[in-house]
Amino acid sequence: MKRIAAITMVRGDAFYLRKWTAWYGGQLGEENLYILLDGRDQPLPDWCPKAHVIPCDRVGGQVARADKGRIERISDEAARLFAAGYDLVIGTDADEMLAVDPKLGVGLAEFLSGLDVRTAVSGLGLDVGQKLGEEADITADRPFLEQRHYAQLGTRYTKASVLGKPLRWGSGFHRVEGHNLHIVKDLYLFHFGYFDMKQLQDRFADADRRAQGWQRHLDKRSRTIRLVTRKKALDFDRWTRFARRFQTVCRPPYAWNKPAMAGLKLVVRIPDRFTALGL
Image (tube, rainbow, N blue to C red; front, side):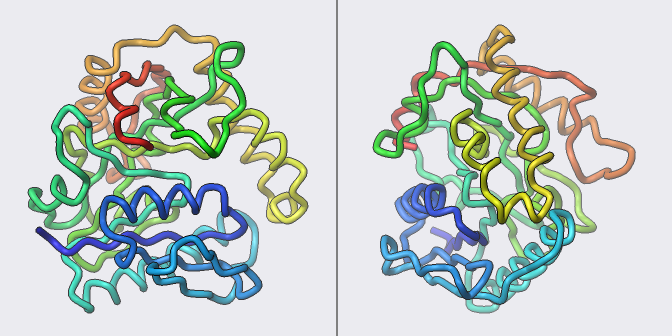
């Protein structure tokens, strides 16, 4: 089995960080988790005593500039982890969970250990939404995939999440600088950051995020909820297979190492088998 680390960087996201540490801790071992805190004023999490929590100086500036500063620090930490003997390093935001299709009957560590990761690999992105009128407000005491059943097959969350050697991620883990995108079959990146309308509305009231220019960004991300609410959901297995092939071939002209969907807005229903993950 390969030695695998997971790394993230957070500021004021305890709700998602709890899920992130529980998920990756269960898959990889909590001692292999590395959490960078964006600002030394952030409280140390007390629910993950074996994880490595690293307070950092605050990365300031507007959204784009801050994203670039954060990913530089994360890439530096990933390089340090490789030097310390790790074979693979997973990098995601705290609201993103990399998971293997449960039909295979293997966990994340076993699945990734069986891959030949020469540069980086990606799971197919599933931007999970809320079907208004059918799905209630999210609660933290139940697995997310028991409460949410729909996702958009967009491209923003098909990310280069797993490094096989020291490389530089682009902002938000969307690409690896100077290398192609490789989407792996049966591997998915679930994004839960904008899957609840009430949470979005609460974030609008966060003065710290407004000061960094996040309000327009958050307003845009509520589109996922509107999309899964109004569009008919397609068959998961058929259309994820299509999306994986499409994104492998289709790339935007401004970034050859990012996926594209040519404007297609596809919504799928997540199969019930995924609830077995406890995610």
